[in-house]
Length: 416
Image (cartoon, rainbow, N blue to C red; front, top):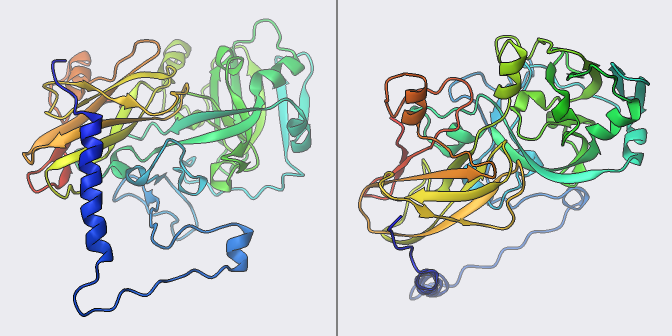
């Protein structure tokens, strides 16, 4: 690596000095002027009943892709909506800001949980039907997992990290392991795949291997400490950790155990058309992105900054993140904040002293099975395409995202 990492104590001393200078300037009123009056927020019934964020916090989701169909449209249909990763802190995405992916612009069903049922059938010894009360009486698990849409592909025309990477989010999910339900039903010999179906007016259904269903899949009724939000599948959704987002079936009502790969509405034209390639193509590769500084943001001047971002992988936990502050000529190991959970967003940080010169920032990650995030040129070479940095990756795109820092501190997408 050969690059000296900025000393953390030096970083903290510089930050403290800067903060001290700003504090003095902020509290000292101008000569002859009265100090600003204090403002207070009165408690209201709605605020007590559910809670509100500060009016100074303005993070919002946006339609994806940029320039595409509006959400909602004139008919109330919601299409893809991207999360504001540029404003994220930590690893958990608030339920109200979690990205939304829809099945062909389907209307959201309004489901009374007391009437909802989940059926397990097919190649099982005992077909079963569960009410929501039945499911909540079973042993539960609570785990952090990301979900990412296959359309989360960065383009040279995208300006912000919300546009390049906003179709992923990470939440704390609570529910029953799918393996618990399948063991209760009893899986017959010869079963090898599972089909999951949701209650949408465009019937969303997807196939995935039985081995995955018996491993770590969750039939989730909880999200971030409350019921799953309607846009994310209330009252029940399937979590298939590490797999492409479309498999995480919302409004889950039926699980069928089968003996082969079935092409469903969600699969056709979207994924591989044979069982071997499909099973291998579902998993999200190791991926990371710097959220600060990122496109559309601006550095106030030369000096110390903390580069921060998110890393995740369908192959397991993130074990290493590296950051380059010189367009990939050298790499420094970043600090992983907290515990790196399997198939979950992981926050990374790196102290950086910007000299005020134009440069590029980028990150790359490695997961627990040894997979490393590639450059677009490396993927292009794999597909025997022209090694152009703006090469459009076919299918799932987990390539390195570069951000260009201009000499005036403005940050731009460097894929072009």
